[in-house]
Image (cartoon, rainbow, N blue to C red):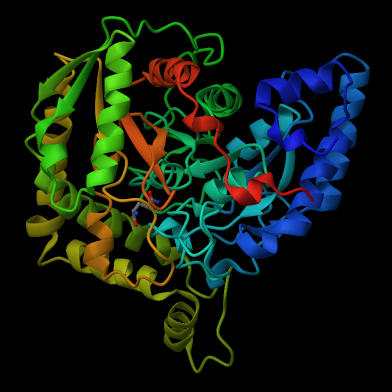
Length: 492
Ligand code: GLN
């Protein structure tokens, strides 16, 4: 079969159960595609063929004796920020180019326990800092829709593998938009869960109060299958919440779109730099939802201007603290012939961290330093609370909030945005992390250059089921999520 990669996750799982094909065949099919096509996309940092085929054989055994779980034998790719025992975990950095984790991240362990097959580890911005995936030590990943454009970031590899059909779905992480923005740039569905829903154990830390893992896939249904696998309380993550997990697949039609109140923040649609075509596609998608019975309600989110400065103090502050562990001593990169311990720290860090990571460490260290802590860090924390309050007030009146996921479509590779230009591109995604809320990106069309546009729906705490359900029903009424990039149409 040459078109196994065109199946949805549900169809793959059913095909495996009914022995139309084996996990080994399905896995080999993806490995062949990766071998043939990934040179052009540069999405994998590490491909693990032997490991994948061994997992596939194990899944095939379970399938044969009838004890396989729902997703047993289905392949996936992990963002290279999730620790994988025995397989390199680089976080896109020279610092961890030699790092092999002695344990699995909880997300990885859960995927393994479900019988999912790991194809490999995929590219990302260094330590998840960025919006283009160009800051990776392993070079830029290409956008499957146009190989001269970026796939977004930081989970750019996760987006590119799915959009090029080099994996059926993938894990990503989102600290300030890194699931939603690459999903938007690559025409995919991506869910950033409520803070605390998915364990952060073994997920390399960027900004611990903002980081959250989640699924990236073609459809809401595919995301729901992965959420059913990875969500849940984990005693190994003290910020993980002990709350019952929904059955996201069973709930795909549970939310009534008829009568659903969708908030449209006035401020969001007047942002300078919002591309006219992005705005038009998002408005068309809202019209579709209105035709399906939703009620559009204009709302205010008055703190919009504070999102970028608040995030770009808090995230670097936490990063500077988290990344202090890379000292050239314990693990990771160590410089050659250090003169003394200070030289060891200094050169190891200067040689192994890229420019954006160094910039964040400097900003964060500055914001946390004794003389500036109150003026910057504490102030940012207070503004963070106001941003959260703004959303809670809005949710008294509406069920979900609509926004673009990004003000533009995918940038050209090498566009060389200044740091502030790049940071401003995160305007629509940052507040969700600052408030700890869930949000989803859904593909809603293309611009004149055939680059995908995404709609973001932001929900109240623990509304993952609702968000997936709304997008699922939208996807039953539209076909944007079924569109494939030319490279995905090529056969191995
Ligand atoms: N683009 C944002 C940043 O550079 C968000 C990154 C992320 O979510 N990991 O920090």
